Image (cartoon, rainbow, N blue to C red):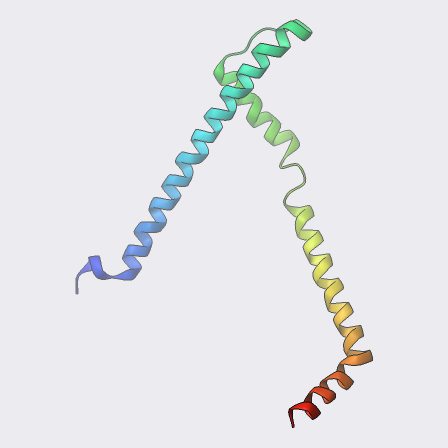
Length: 114
């Protein structure tokens, strides 16, 4: 049996490639965002507020600082809480429906089938 035909090894190689590509893409997006922050800062801040121009690395640092300070703008734990609430609400609604109409509706369904 050759190792090249083993699907586990092929899947592992694919996973390594995807992880490596994801790291490269994250780094590339970080560079792009840092560059645009630098451009915006250097275009606006010196004229409006009289601040100094910044270089690329300072722009990238601002991106990281803003990410740490402001997070993901509400995505994450708040979304999870909303999902849990909706799931709980659906369960409660289903329980109420089952108590009021469910048994009768199920019995009618069984009568139609027979």
